[in-house]
Image (cartoon, rainbow, N blue to C red):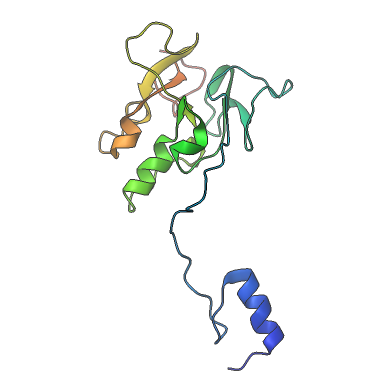
Length: 167
């Protein structure tokens, strides 16, 4: 099948087609340039009204897609790697999926930046939050190592159960 030069150009620009007009495979090579800091104040309190979260993709999480309530709001951002989360943040799901290519986490909302913490250290997380790993929260013991990093999460038991049922 022959395509016009214009059709090939449009195809190449939109989806990366080759000379035959077939869509090429996307490459998954990591970007070699500097990482954009998507949130600079991860884990701090916020509200949707005061816009206190900072960074290129910063957002205030008050209720997750799964219905989990974040007391006082939680500054975060979507992420693929921890470098996007600032010096006090990590991207557990993104890092787990990067190091274990066949690992896909079951909840898309959890691909967010989380504040790092130290288990058992008083004040490591602010009031209403506990220092736990997402592997523990989601009962995913077989998850890759980054999912076992301690982060500040709402202090009730799991993020996937009823948001109104603290333990």
